[in-house]
Image (cartoon, rainbow, N blue to C red; front, side, top):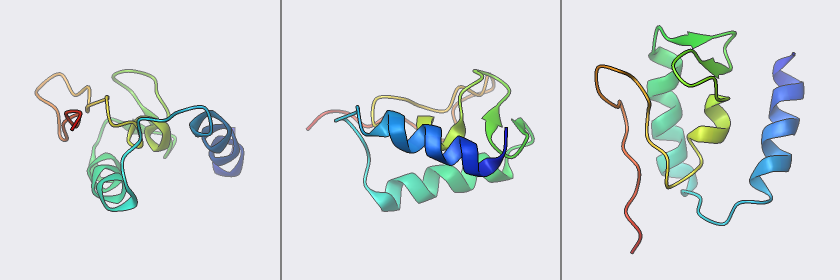
Length: 77
């Protein structure tokens, strides 16, 4: 799957979500993912199989790294 196809799928799925983080938090999370050696195909977390651009946007998710999350879920306010 190309990055463009992944972006389209992620965009479509995020339209169904209401508990998302703002762009600053999203970008900080993605920076951790991009630097992580567990990122495969430049799109996918090898620990959970999620597209990182999707998982990083969801407020109720955290990084699934087995040695400890690189970023945490946000608590509801």
